Image 1 (tube, rainbow, N blue to C red):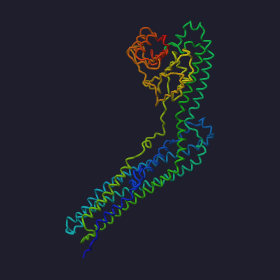
Image 2 (cartoon, rainbow, N blue to C red):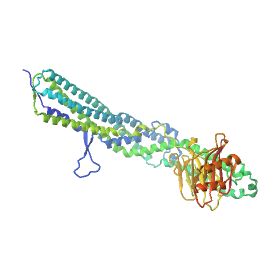
Image 3 (cartoon, helix red, strand yellow):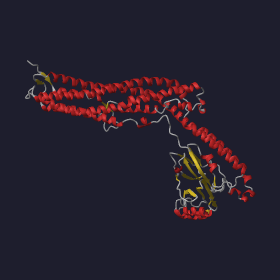
Image 4 (cartoon, rainbow, N blue to C red):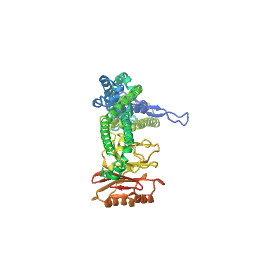
Length: 583
Protein backbone atom coordinates (compact mmCIF):
# COMPACT_ATOMS: atom_id res chain seq x y z
CA UNK A 1 0.00 0.00 0.00
CA UNK A 2 1.48 3.34 -1.04
CA UNK A 3 1.78 6.20 1.43
CA UNK A 4 -0.47 9.21 1.29
CA UNK A 5 1.46 12.51 1.04
CA UNK A 6 -0.11 15.46 2.89
CA UNK A 7 0.30 18.82 1.16
CA UNK A 8 -1.07 22.13 2.39
CA UNK A 9 -0.82 24.64 -0.50
CA UNK A 10 -1.77 27.51 1.78
CA UNK A 11 1.13 26.74 4.14
CA UNK A 12 3.52 26.42 1.20
CA UNK A 13 2.78 29.88 -0.11
CA UNK A 14 2.70 31.37 3.38
CA UNK A 15 6.25 30.07 3.84
CA UNK A 16 7.28 31.79 0.62
CA UNK A 17 5.65 34.99 1.90
CA UNK A 18 7.46 34.87 5.25
CA UNK A 19 10.78 34.70 3.42
CA UNK A 20 10.32 38.24 2.15
CA UNK A 21 10.25 39.90 5.56
CA UNK A 22 14.01 39.88 5.99
CA UNK A 23 14.50 41.95 2.82
CA UNK A 24 12.45 44.90 4.04
CA UNK A 25 12.87 47.38 6.88
CA UNK A 26 10.65 50.19 8.06
CA UNK A 27 12.10 53.59 7.19
CA UNK A 28 10.87 56.70 9.02
CA UNK A 29 8.80 59.07 6.92
CA UNK A 30 10.59 62.41 6.62
CA UNK A 31 7.46 64.57 6.64
CA UNK A 32 4.48 62.90 8.29
CA UNK A 33 1.04 64.14 7.35
CA UNK A 34 -0.40 62.68 10.54
CA UNK A 35 0.97 61.06 13.65
CA UNK A 36 -0.72 57.81 12.63
CA UNK A 37 1.17 57.55 9.34
CA UNK A 38 3.14 54.31 9.25
CA UNK A 39 6.84 54.14 8.40
CA UNK A 40 7.50 53.51 4.71
CA UNK A 41 8.88 50.13 3.60
CA UNK A 42 12.48 50.26 2.37
CA UNK A 43 15.23 47.88 1.33
CA UNK A 44 17.06 46.27 4.23
CA UNK A 45 20.32 47.92 3.10
CA UNK A 46 19.96 51.40 4.57
CA UNK A 47 20.52 54.04 1.90
CA UNK A 48 21.69 56.58 4.51
CA UNK A 49 24.28 54.08 5.70
CA UNK A 50 25.29 53.34 2.12
CA UNK A 51 25.77 57.01 1.24
CA UNK A 52 27.84 57.44 4.40
CA UNK A 53 30.17 54.63 3.37
CA UNK A 54 30.45 55.99 -0.16
CA UNK A 55 31.20 59.51 1.08
CA UNK A 56 34.02 58.20 3.25
CA UNK A 57 35.45 56.19 0.35
CA UNK A 58 35.07 59.11 -2.06
CA UNK A 59 36.94 61.41 0.32
CA UNK A 60 39.71 58.90 0.96
CA UNK A 61 40.31 58.45 -2.77
CA UNK A 62 41.43 62.09 -2.88
CA UNK A 63 44.47 61.08 -0.84
CA UNK A 64 47.46 60.21 -3.07
CA UNK A 65 47.91 56.57 -3.99
CA UNK A 66 51.72 56.71 -4.06
CA UNK A 67 54.46 58.73 -2.37
CA UNK A 68 55.36 60.62 -5.57
CA UNK A 69 53.38 63.71 -4.56
CA UNK A 70 54.99 63.81 -1.13
CA UNK A 71 58.47 63.48 -2.59
CA UNK A 72 57.71 66.22 -5.11
CA UNK A 73 56.57 68.63 -2.40
CA UNK A 74 59.28 68.01 0.20
CA UNK A 75 60.73 70.17 1.50
CA UNK A 76 57.73 72.52 1.40
CA UNK A 77 58.86 75.69 3.15
CA UNK A 78 55.37 76.48 4.41
CA UNK A 79 55.14 73.13 6.17
CA UNK A 80 58.16 73.96 8.31
CA UNK A 81 55.68 75.67 10.60
CA UNK A 82 54.66 72.27 11.92
CA UNK A 83 56.44 69.47 10.02
CA UNK A 84 60.08 70.05 10.83
CA UNK A 85 61.79 66.74 10.11
CA UNK A 86 61.96 64.14 7.37
CA UNK A 87 60.67 61.50 9.79
CA UNK A 88 57.52 63.51 10.46
CA UNK A 89 56.99 63.90 6.73
CA UNK A 90 57.48 60.15 6.23
CA UNK A 91 54.98 59.47 9.02
CA UNK A 92 52.51 61.72 7.21
CA UNK A 93 52.45 59.88 3.91
CA UNK A 94 52.96 56.40 5.35
CA UNK A 95 49.79 56.92 7.37
CA UNK A 96 47.77 58.42 4.52
CA UNK A 97 48.68 56.34 1.46
CA UNK A 98 47.30 52.99 2.80
CA UNK A 99 43.90 54.66 3.34
CA UNK A 100 43.59 55.24 -0.41
CA UNK A 101 44.52 51.63 -1.15
CA UNK A 102 42.04 50.25 1.40
CA UNK A 103 39.16 52.38 0.11
CA UNK A 104 39.96 51.62 -3.51
CA UNK A 105 39.77 47.90 -2.74
CA UNK A 106 36.53 48.30 -0.78
CA UNK A 107 34.99 50.28 -3.63
CA UNK A 108 35.74 47.35 -5.94
CA UNK A 109 34.90 44.49 -3.56
CA UNK A 110 32.26 46.07 -1.31
CA UNK A 111 30.51 49.19 -2.59
CA UNK A 112 30.10 48.15 -6.23
CA UNK A 113 28.99 44.58 -5.36
CA UNK A 114 26.38 45.93 -2.91
CA UNK A 115 24.76 47.76 -5.80
CA UNK A 116 25.02 44.55 -7.82
CA UNK A 117 23.45 42.67 -4.92
CA UNK A 118 20.45 45.01 -4.89
CA UNK A 119 20.00 44.38 -8.60
CA UNK A 120 20.32 40.62 -8.00
CA UNK A 121 17.67 40.70 -5.25
CA UNK A 122 15.39 42.76 -7.50
CA UNK A 123 15.84 40.23 -10.32
CA UNK A 124 15.21 37.35 -7.92
CA UNK A 125 12.05 39.00 -6.59
CA UNK A 126 10.79 39.66 -10.11
CA UNK A 127 11.41 36.04 -11.10
CA UNK A 128 9.84 34.77 -7.87
CA UNK A 129 6.52 36.48 -8.64
CA UNK A 130 6.37 34.74 -12.02
CA UNK A 131 7.60 31.38 -10.73
CA UNK A 132 5.19 31.32 -7.77
CA UNK A 133 2.17 32.03 -9.94
CA UNK A 134 3.24 29.22 -12.26
CA UNK A 135 3.92 26.96 -9.27
CA UNK A 136 0.35 27.58 -8.07
CA UNK A 137 -0.98 26.23 -11.39
CA UNK A 138 1.12 23.08 -11.11
CA UNK A 139 0.17 22.53 -7.47
CA UNK A 140 -3.53 22.84 -8.36
CA UNK A 141 -3.09 19.91 -10.75
CA UNK A 142 -1.06 17.84 -8.28
CA UNK A 143 -3.60 18.39 -5.49
CA UNK A 144 -6.67 17.82 -7.67
CA UNK A 145 -8.32 14.60 -6.41
CA UNK A 146 -9.96 14.09 -9.78
CA UNK A 147 -6.60 13.76 -11.53
CA UNK A 148 -4.83 10.43 -10.90
CA UNK A 149 -1.40 10.73 -9.26
CA UNK A 150 0.29 8.63 -11.95
CA UNK A 151 -1.46 10.27 -14.87
CA UNK A 152 0.62 12.03 -17.49
CA UNK A 153 -0.93 15.33 -16.50
CA UNK A 154 -0.03 14.90 -12.83
CA UNK A 155 3.48 13.62 -13.59
CA UNK A 156 4.15 16.58 -15.90
CA UNK A 157 2.86 19.00 -13.27
CA UNK A 158 5.18 17.45 -10.67
CA UNK A 159 8.15 17.75 -13.05
CA UNK A 160 7.29 21.37 -13.84
CA UNK A 161 6.97 22.22 -10.15
CA UNK A 162 10.37 20.69 -9.39
CA UNK A 163 11.98 22.69 -12.21
CA UNK A 164 10.51 25.89 -10.81
CA UNK A 165 11.83 25.08 -7.34
CA UNK A 166 15.26 24.24 -8.76
CA UNK A 167 15.41 27.59 -10.56
CA UNK A 168 14.53 29.47 -7.36
CA UNK A 169 17.13 27.51 -5.39
CA UNK A 170 19.91 28.06 -7.93
CA UNK A 171 19.30 31.80 -8.05
CA UNK A 172 19.21 31.98 -4.25
CA UNK A 173 22.50 30.06 -4.12
CA UNK A 174 24.20 32.52 -6.49
CA UNK A 175 22.94 35.47 -4.45
CA UNK A 176 24.23 33.95 -1.21
CA UNK A 177 27.66 33.46 -2.77
CA UNK A 178 27.72 37.18 -3.59
CA UNK A 179 26.66 37.91 -0.02
CA UNK A 180 29.50 35.87 1.40
CA UNK A 181 32.08 37.73 -0.71
CA UNK A 182 30.68 41.15 0.23
CA UNK A 183 30.58 40.20 3.92
CA UNK A 184 34.23 39.16 3.74
CA UNK A 185 35.09 42.48 2.07
CA UNK A 186 33.28 44.38 4.84
CA UNK A 187 35.10 42.45 7.56
CA UNK A 188 38.46 43.13 5.90
CA UNK A 189 37.68 46.82 5.37
CA UNK A 190 36.54 47.18 8.96
CA UNK A 191 39.82 45.72 10.17
CA UNK A 192 41.79 48.00 7.83
CA UNK A 193 39.76 51.03 8.89
CA UNK A 194 40.51 50.28 12.54
CA UNK A 195 44.21 50.18 11.62
CA UNK A 196 43.87 53.43 9.65
CA UNK A 197 42.08 55.04 12.58
CA UNK A 198 44.95 54.12 14.90
CA UNK A 199 47.49 55.60 12.47
CA UNK A 200 45.44 58.78 12.08
CA UNK A 201 45.13 59.07 15.85
CA UNK A 202 48.93 59.07 16.14
CA UNK A 203 49.10 61.59 13.29
CA UNK A 204 46.38 63.79 14.77
CA UNK A 205 48.70 66.29 16.55
CA UNK A 206 50.22 67.14 13.17
CA UNK A 207 46.89 67.20 11.37
CA UNK A 208 45.36 69.43 14.04
CA UNK A 209 47.45 72.33 12.78
CA UNK A 210 45.03 74.25 10.57
CA UNK A 211 47.39 74.70 7.66
CA UNK A 212 45.30 74.50 4.49
CA UNK A 213 45.21 75.41 0.82
CA UNK A 214 44.43 79.05 1.56
CA UNK A 215 47.95 79.46 2.92
CA UNK A 216 49.29 79.05 -0.60
CA UNK A 217 48.20 82.62 -1.27
CA UNK A 218 50.53 83.96 1.41
CA UNK A 219 53.80 83.84 -0.59
CA UNK A 220 52.13 85.45 -3.61
CA UNK A 221 50.46 88.10 -1.44
CA UNK A 222 53.76 88.95 0.22
CA UNK A 223 55.46 89.17 -3.16
CA UNK A 224 52.72 91.46 -4.50
CA UNK A 225 52.97 93.78 -1.49
CA UNK A 226 56.73 94.05 -1.89
CA UNK A 227 56.31 94.76 -5.60
CA UNK A 228 53.68 97.42 -4.86
CA UNK A 229 56.04 99.19 -2.50
CA UNK A 230 58.81 99.19 -5.08
CA UNK A 231 56.51 100.44 -7.83
CA UNK A 232 55.17 103.19 -5.58
CA UNK A 233 58.71 104.37 -4.80
CA UNK A 234 59.71 104.20 -8.44
CA UNK A 235 56.81 106.32 -9.60
CA UNK A 236 57.26 108.84 -6.80
CA UNK A 237 61.02 109.20 -7.26
CA UNK A 238 60.95 109.32 -11.04
CA UNK A 239 57.92 111.58 -11.49
CA UNK A 240 59.89 114.82 -11.31
CA UNK A 241 62.84 113.61 -13.35
CA UNK A 242 60.92 112.29 -16.31
CA UNK A 243 58.63 115.29 -16.63
CA UNK A 244 61.47 117.41 -17.99
CA UNK A 245 60.34 119.50 -20.93
CA UNK A 246 63.38 118.45 -22.96
CA UNK A 247 62.40 114.75 -22.83
CA UNK A 248 58.75 115.41 -23.63
CA UNK A 249 59.53 117.76 -26.50
CA UNK A 250 61.84 115.21 -28.13
CA UNK A 251 58.88 112.87 -28.75
CA UNK A 252 61.46 110.11 -28.54
CA UNK A 253 59.17 108.14 -26.20
CA UNK A 254 56.72 107.62 -29.09
CA UNK A 255 59.10 105.21 -30.79
CA UNK A 256 60.87 103.59 -27.87
CA UNK A 257 58.53 100.61 -27.93
CA UNK A 258 57.33 100.02 -31.53
CA UNK A 259 54.44 97.59 -31.76
CA UNK A 260 53.19 98.19 -28.23
CA UNK A 261 51.10 101.26 -28.83
CA UNK A 262 54.11 103.52 -29.09
CA UNK A 263 54.86 103.68 -25.36
CA UNK A 264 55.10 101.92 -22.05
CA UNK A 265 54.61 105.14 -20.11
CA UNK A 266 54.61 108.37 -22.13
CA UNK A 267 56.93 110.11 -19.71
CA UNK A 268 59.15 107.19 -18.63
CA UNK A 269 62.87 107.83 -18.30
CA UNK A 270 65.41 105.25 -19.42
CA UNK A 271 66.18 104.41 -15.79
CA UNK A 272 62.56 103.79 -15.00
CA UNK A 273 62.04 101.72 -18.14
CA UNK A 274 64.99 99.54 -17.19
CA UNK A 275 63.71 99.20 -13.63
CA UNK A 276 60.30 98.14 -14.89
CA UNK A 277 61.87 95.61 -17.24
CA UNK A 278 63.80 94.12 -14.33
CA UNK A 279 60.72 93.89 -12.17
CA UNK A 280 58.78 92.30 -15.02
CA UNK A 281 61.49 89.66 -15.49
CA UNK A 282 61.64 88.87 -11.76
CA UNK A 283 57.88 88.70 -11.60
CA UNK A 284 57.75 86.24 -14.51
CA UNK A 285 60.32 84.01 -12.81
CA UNK A 286 58.36 84.10 -9.58
CA UNK A 287 55.11 83.19 -11.33
CA UNK A 288 56.81 80.25 -13.05
CA UNK A 289 58.10 79.03 -9.70
CA UNK A 290 54.68 79.36 -8.10
CA UNK A 291 52.93 77.65 -11.02
CA UNK A 292 55.32 74.69 -10.96
CA UNK A 293 54.78 73.86 -7.31
CA UNK A 294 51.34 75.28 -6.76
CA UNK A 295 49.30 72.30 -7.95
CA UNK A 296 51.32 69.73 -6.02
CA UNK A 297 51.23 71.76 -2.81
CA UNK A 298 47.52 72.42 -3.20
CA UNK A 299 46.89 68.71 -3.67
CA UNK A 300 49.01 67.87 -0.64
CA UNK A 301 47.14 70.32 1.56
CA UNK A 302 43.80 69.03 0.28
CA UNK A 303 44.96 65.53 1.24
CA UNK A 304 45.75 66.74 4.74
CA UNK A 305 42.34 68.44 4.96
CA UNK A 306 40.79 65.16 3.81
CA UNK A 307 42.63 63.25 6.52
CA UNK A 308 41.23 65.63 9.14
CA UNK A 309 37.74 64.92 7.83
CA UNK A 310 38.34 61.16 7.91
CA UNK A 311 39.27 61.32 11.58
CA UNK A 312 35.96 63.01 12.34
CA UNK A 313 34.01 60.36 10.40
CA UNK A 314 35.75 57.17 11.55
CA UNK A 315 33.23 56.34 14.30
CA UNK A 316 30.31 56.81 11.93
CA UNK A 317 31.94 54.61 9.30
CA UNK A 318 32.45 51.79 11.81
CA UNK A 319 28.75 51.96 12.74
CA UNK A 320 27.78 51.93 9.07
CA UNK A 321 29.91 48.84 8.49
CA UNK A 322 28.26 47.03 11.41
CA UNK A 323 24.84 48.01 10.08
CA UNK A 324 25.73 46.83 6.58
CA UNK A 325 26.88 43.49 7.99
CA UNK A 326 23.56 43.00 9.82
CA UNK A 327 21.59 43.92 6.70
CA UNK A 328 23.55 41.45 4.59
CA UNK A 329 22.95 38.76 7.22
CA UNK A 330 19.21 39.45 6.93
CA UNK A 331 19.34 39.04 3.15
CA UNK A 332 21.29 35.81 3.59
CA UNK A 333 18.66 34.55 6.05
CA UNK A 334 15.88 35.44 3.62
CA UNK A 335 17.51 33.53 0.79
CA UNK A 336 18.15 30.59 3.12
CA UNK A 337 14.47 30.52 4.17
CA UNK A 338 13.41 30.48 0.52
CA UNK A 339 15.86 27.68 -0.17
CA UNK A 340 14.52 25.64 2.78
CA UNK A 341 10.91 26.18 1.69
CA UNK A 342 11.82 25.01 -1.81
CA UNK A 343 13.68 21.96 -0.42
CA UNK A 344 10.75 20.95 1.83
CA UNK A 345 8.24 21.10 -1.00
CA UNK A 346 10.64 19.39 -3.37
CA UNK A 347 11.06 16.41 -1.00
CA UNK A 348 7.30 16.06 -0.73
CA UNK A 349 6.89 16.11 -4.49
CA UNK A 350 9.63 13.50 -4.92
CA UNK A 351 7.93 11.24 -2.37
CA UNK A 352 4.57 11.26 -4.16
CA UNK A 353 3.83 7.79 -5.40
CA UNK A 354 0.29 7.17 -4.23
CA UNK A 355 -2.49 9.53 -3.34
CA UNK A 356 -2.08 13.18 -2.36
CA UNK A 357 -3.96 14.44 0.64
CA UNK A 358 -4.74 18.15 0.42
CA UNK A 359 -4.87 19.55 3.94
CA UNK A 360 -6.34 22.91 2.95
CA UNK A 361 -9.43 23.05 0.82
CA UNK A 362 -10.96 25.82 -1.23
CA UNK A 363 -9.48 27.41 -4.32
CA UNK A 364 -10.39 30.91 -3.08
CA UNK A 365 -8.13 30.57 -0.01
CA UNK A 366 -5.30 29.16 -2.09
CA UNK A 367 -5.64 32.08 -4.46
CA UNK A 368 -5.51 34.46 -1.49
CA UNK A 369 -2.27 32.95 -0.20
CA UNK A 370 -0.58 32.98 -3.60
CA UNK A 371 -1.65 36.62 -4.05
CA UNK A 372 -0.09 37.46 -0.69
CA UNK A 373 3.16 35.79 -1.73
CA UNK A 374 3.24 37.55 -5.09
CA UNK A 375 2.47 40.92 -3.49
CA UNK A 376 5.24 40.43 -0.92
CA UNK A 377 7.83 39.62 -3.57
CA UNK A 378 6.68 42.57 -5.65
CA UNK A 379 7.36 44.76 -2.61
CA UNK A 380 10.87 43.31 -2.39
CA UNK A 381 11.31 44.00 -6.10
CA UNK A 382 10.25 47.63 -5.67
CA UNK A 383 12.43 48.49 -2.66
CA UNK A 384 15.49 46.66 -4.02
CA UNK A 385 15.16 48.38 -7.37
CA UNK A 386 14.75 51.75 -5.66
CA UNK A 387 17.93 51.19 -3.66
CA UNK A 388 19.85 50.04 -6.74
CA UNK A 389 18.72 53.11 -8.66
CA UNK A 390 20.71 55.37 -6.32
CA UNK A 391 23.84 53.71 -7.62
CA UNK A 392 27.37 54.76 -6.92
CA UNK A 393 28.21 58.35 -6.08
CA UNK A 394 29.70 59.42 -9.41
CA UNK A 395 32.77 61.11 -8.01
CA UNK A 396 33.76 57.96 -6.15
CA UNK A 397 34.55 56.17 -9.40
CA UNK A 398 35.69 59.18 -11.42
CA UNK A 399 38.13 60.70 -8.94
CA UNK A 400 41.53 61.01 -10.58
CA UNK A 401 43.86 61.20 -7.62
CA UNK A 402 47.22 60.75 -9.29
CA UNK A 403 47.02 63.72 -11.66
CA UNK A 404 45.21 66.64 -10.03
CA UNK A 405 43.69 68.99 -12.55
CA UNK A 406 45.92 71.99 -13.06
CA UNK A 407 44.35 75.31 -12.26
CA UNK A 408 44.48 77.67 -15.23
CA UNK A 409 47.29 80.23 -14.98
CA UNK A 410 46.31 83.82 -15.71
CA UNK A 411 48.00 85.63 -18.60
CA UNK A 412 47.54 89.41 -18.82
CA UNK A 413 48.17 90.28 -22.48
CA UNK A 414 47.77 94.05 -22.32
CA UNK A 415 46.30 96.73 -20.07
CA UNK A 416 45.22 100.36 -20.32
CA UNK A 417 44.49 102.80 -17.49
CA UNK A 418 43.23 106.35 -17.83
CA UNK A 419 44.50 106.76 -21.41
CA UNK A 420 47.89 105.10 -20.81
CA UNK A 421 49.21 101.66 -21.67
CA UNK A 422 50.29 100.05 -18.38
CA UNK A 423 50.74 96.40 -19.34
CA UNK A 424 53.86 95.63 -17.29
CA UNK A 425 52.59 97.48 -14.23
CA UNK A 426 49.29 95.60 -14.49
CA UNK A 427 51.05 92.24 -14.76
CA UNK A 428 53.02 92.98 -11.61
CA UNK A 429 50.04 94.15 -9.58
CA UNK A 430 47.10 92.09 -10.79
CA UNK A 431 48.38 88.63 -11.72
CA UNK A 432 48.07 86.22 -8.78
CA UNK A 433 48.99 83.04 -10.63
CA UNK A 434 45.67 81.23 -10.99
CA UNK A 435 43.59 84.39 -10.71
CA UNK A 436 43.56 88.09 -11.53
CA UNK A 437 42.72 90.34 -8.58
CA UNK A 438 41.78 93.98 -9.19
CA UNK A 439 41.43 95.99 -5.98
CA UNK A 440 40.19 99.27 -7.43
CA UNK A 441 41.37 101.38 -4.48
CA UNK A 442 44.90 99.96 -4.45
CA UNK A 443 46.00 100.36 -8.07
CA UNK A 444 49.38 102.03 -8.53
CA UNK A 445 49.51 103.60 -11.99
CA UNK A 446 50.71 107.01 -13.16
CA UNK A 447 47.86 109.50 -13.25
CA UNK A 448 47.37 111.04 -16.68
CA UNK A 449 43.90 112.37 -15.76
CA UNK A 450 44.26 113.90 -12.27
CA UNK A 451 40.99 114.50 -10.49
CA UNK A 452 38.96 112.61 -13.10
CA UNK A 453 37.35 109.15 -12.97
CA UNK A 454 39.51 106.60 -14.76
CA UNK A 455 38.76 103.18 -16.19
CA UNK A 456 41.01 100.12 -16.32
CA UNK A 457 40.79 97.73 -19.28
CA UNK A 458 42.71 94.47 -19.54
CA UNK A 459 42.96 91.89 -22.30
CA UNK A 460 43.66 88.50 -20.72
CA UNK A 461 43.34 84.74 -21.03
CA UNK A 462 44.11 81.63 -18.99
CA UNK A 463 46.86 79.23 -20.04
CA UNK A 464 47.87 79.04 -23.70
CA UNK A 465 44.54 79.04 -25.51
CA UNK A 466 44.96 81.91 -27.98
CA UNK A 467 41.27 81.79 -28.85
CA UNK A 468 40.06 82.31 -25.29
CA UNK A 469 40.99 85.99 -24.89
CA UNK A 470 38.60 88.05 -22.78
CA UNK A 471 38.23 91.74 -22.06
CA UNK A 472 37.47 93.24 -18.65
CA UNK A 473 36.78 96.91 -17.98
CA UNK A 474 35.93 98.59 -14.70
CA UNK A 475 35.75 101.96 -12.99
CA UNK A 476 38.56 102.54 -10.49
CA UNK A 477 38.66 104.05 -7.03
CA UNK A 478 35.27 102.55 -6.17
CA UNK A 479 36.45 100.22 -3.40
CA UNK A 480 35.37 97.15 -5.34
CA UNK A 481 37.57 94.06 -5.66
CA UNK A 482 37.18 92.09 -8.89
CA UNK A 483 38.48 88.50 -9.04
CA UNK A 484 38.83 86.77 -12.41
CA UNK A 485 39.51 83.03 -12.63
CA UNK A 486 39.40 80.42 -15.37
CA UNK A 487 36.06 79.22 -13.99
CA UNK A 488 34.49 82.54 -13.01
CA UNK A 489 34.88 85.87 -14.75
CA UNK A 490 31.88 87.98 -13.80
CA UNK A 491 31.80 91.27 -15.69
CA UNK A 492 34.15 90.16 -18.45
CA UNK A 493 33.26 89.25 -22.01
CA UNK A 494 34.90 87.52 -24.94
CA UNK A 495 37.21 89.78 -26.92
CA UNK A 496 35.29 90.69 -30.08
CA UNK A 497 38.03 90.27 -32.68
CA UNK A 498 37.82 92.13 -36.02
CA UNK A 499 40.03 92.94 -39.05
CA UNK A 500 39.92 94.23 -42.61
CA UNK A 501 40.81 90.89 -44.15
CA UNK A 502 43.44 88.13 -44.31
CA UNK A 503 46.02 90.38 -46.04
CA UNK A 504 45.92 93.16 -43.44
CA UNK A 505 48.90 93.75 -41.14
CA UNK A 506 46.49 94.48 -38.31
CA UNK A 507 44.42 92.03 -36.32
CA UNK A 508 42.25 93.79 -33.76
CA UNK A 509 41.29 91.91 -30.58
CA UNK A 510 39.12 94.49 -28.87
CA UNK A 511 38.40 98.20 -28.65
CA UNK A 512 37.18 99.79 -25.41
CA UNK A 513 35.71 103.26 -24.98
CA UNK A 514 34.95 104.30 -21.42
CA UNK A 515 33.44 101.26 -19.69
CA UNK A 516 32.31 99.20 -22.65
CA UNK A 517 33.73 97.17 -25.50
CA UNK A 518 32.90 98.76 -28.85
CA UNK A 519 30.71 96.53 -31.01
CA UNK A 520 28.96 98.82 -33.50
CA UNK A 521 30.15 98.27 -37.06
CA UNK A 522 30.62 101.91 -38.05
CA UNK A 523 33.01 102.66 -35.18
CA UNK A 524 34.99 99.46 -35.76
CA UNK A 525 35.40 100.33 -39.45
CA UNK A 526 36.71 103.76 -38.46
CA UNK A 527 39.36 102.12 -36.25
CA UNK A 528 40.46 99.71 -38.98
CA UNK A 529 40.58 102.39 -41.70
CA UNK A 530 42.57 104.76 -39.47
CA UNK A 531 45.18 102.09 -38.78
CA UNK A 532 45.45 101.01 -42.41
CA UNK A 533 45.60 104.45 -44.00
CA UNK A 534 47.15 106.80 -41.42
CA UNK A 535 48.76 104.61 -38.74
CA UNK A 536 47.04 106.99 -36.34
CA UNK A 537 43.56 107.80 -35.10
CA UNK A 538 42.11 111.00 -33.59
CA UNK A 539 40.09 109.83 -30.60
CA UNK A 540 37.62 112.71 -30.84
CA UNK A 541 36.08 111.25 -34.01
CA UNK A 542 35.85 107.80 -32.42
CA UNK A 543 34.27 109.36 -29.33
CA UNK A 544 31.61 111.03 -31.45
CA UNK A 545 30.82 107.76 -33.21
CA UNK A 546 30.79 105.70 -30.01
CA UNK A 547 28.74 108.18 -27.99
CA UNK A 548 26.17 108.46 -30.75
CA UNK A 549 25.44 104.73 -30.50
CA UNK A 550 25.84 104.16 -26.76
CA UNK A 551 27.45 106.43 -24.19
CA UNK A 552 28.57 104.04 -21.45
CA UNK A 553 29.74 106.79 -19.10
CA UNK A 554 27.60 109.93 -19.56
CA UNK A 555 29.21 113.22 -18.59
CA UNK A 556 32.68 111.71 -18.02
CA UNK A 557 35.88 112.33 -19.96
CA UNK A 558 36.60 108.88 -21.28
CA UNK A 559 39.71 107.07 -22.44
CA UNK A 560 40.19 104.62 -25.31
CA UNK A 561 42.10 101.33 -25.41
CA UNK A 562 42.72 99.50 -28.70
CA UNK A 563 44.12 95.97 -28.31
CA UNK A 564 45.59 94.66 -31.55
CA UNK A 565 48.39 92.68 -33.18
CA UNK A 566 50.54 94.28 -35.88
CA UNK A 567 52.96 92.13 -37.88
CA UNK A 568 52.55 89.43 -35.22
CA UNK A 569 53.38 91.71 -32.26
CA UNK A 570 50.72 92.31 -29.61
CA UNK A 571 50.07 96.01 -29.04
CA UNK A 572 47.87 98.29 -26.98
CA UNK A 573 47.06 101.84 -28.04
CA UNK A 574 45.76 104.16 -25.32
CA UNK A 575 44.62 107.76 -25.29
CA UNK A 576 42.30 110.21 -23.57
CA UNK A 577 39.15 111.41 -25.34
CA UNK A 578 40.82 114.49 -26.88
CA UNK A 579 44.09 112.74 -27.78
CA UNK A 580 45.31 110.43 -30.53
CA UNK A 581 46.42 106.83 -30.88
CA UNK A 582 49.44 105.95 -33.01
CA UNK A 583 49.46 102.43 -34.49
